[in-house]
Image 1 (cartoon, rainbow, N blue to C red):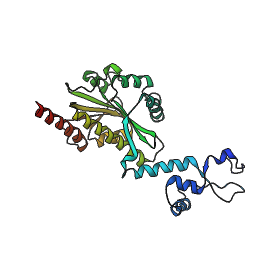
Image 2: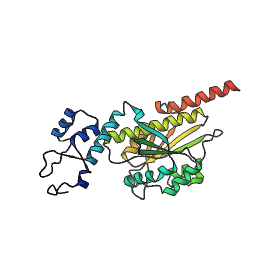
Image 3: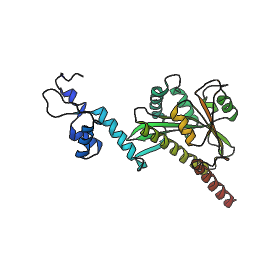
Length: 277
């Protein structure tokens, strides 16, 4: 947009005044103008106007960044919850922007897997919007090993199991995605919140008596590899695909504090079960 263009009503809607921007960011007047002077917040002054205005997309993104950083101390600001069928197109949109069409699971496959196991796909909501998602599938053991060694591709819905309590399960973390556009610190924070939510769910499964023996995942992204390492998973690079890694974690052998949450839940179930028998 040229600064020689007169400021019209439709254009004004795309900008905040100083007081509106300050309120949107939730900071004091002095803090706001300090950030303007510093250049962190860019001001636009139109010809013939004395007062500057501030682009809404820039201010809104900055507000999300500030609130996400604050959320590190107030985790209740975001919600980790099971995905609904209405959420799945948004997951596809996020993954398309991150991985392209080739690296994105089609919508229909997601629908079929969710129909097979309604507790396999989860989203993270921040200010009412989905900012990330994670999928954890209990998968047929023989098929999963073929998947991890590039003998098959994708996870057909019929290979997704329910959360059984009468047979040990192997779990595949299919994906952990964070919507692009956030700063690196905020993106990592949302990624860790997704992991924390997944671990809480695993603890719940333990309390229900679900026995998980192994957890697997694959990744070629810096974020995915970072999160797998955070979980204490052991990785190796695919020989035939440099840059792509497969990760494994033996639940019983792991002393990772996050996996300890699941173990505590399972120990509680077993203690209660023994006392009832």
